[in-house]
Length: 196
Ligand SMILES: O=C([O-])CC(=O)C(=O)O
Ligand SMILES: [Mg+2]
Image 1: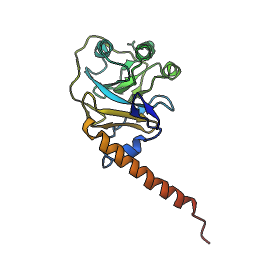
Image 2: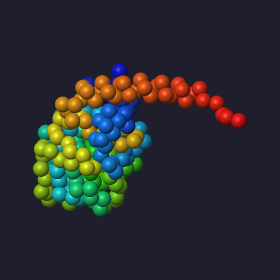
Image 3: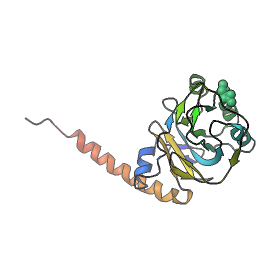
Image 4: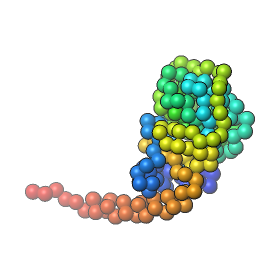
């Protein structure tokens, strides 16, 4: 099985299937990968920040651990990038698992080159304020979905889903069953022939 830091990889358990396994809930609406092939899977490190302000993200880099996903409620703001190349360089050096923003980013060409998976609501060249306030830890909302520290965050080309930590084993089991069912439907589809 493919895994990322001990968490199932979306290459094995796609985000769409994990959402199906949660009665089709759990998807962070409007949050997209910033480069094709970006994929992440790991425990949430939550931050709430004033929209358009990244002081809290810099503070998060003081304590975030390898493999954790920096996931940020930035109020859904699309007018100022919370991160860019320099912030993502830090993320890469610290080997965190990736970044999810309910907010915007910039320097997207460099983000793809750095290879750190970044998901966001928007891209804008306008830079962030750096004064706060912010809050590290605690429950936040991202794309309309609640996220607590340690919840499982998964992202692939389709977007991001949040799996509550205590539901992880059940969701994995149900997702594997769904994948088996899909394989059968795929085989049946391949047997179709034109009519007439
Ligand atoms: O200036 C910022 O804080 C955001 C940015 O562009 C970078 O991290 O490169
Ligand atoms: Mg920059």
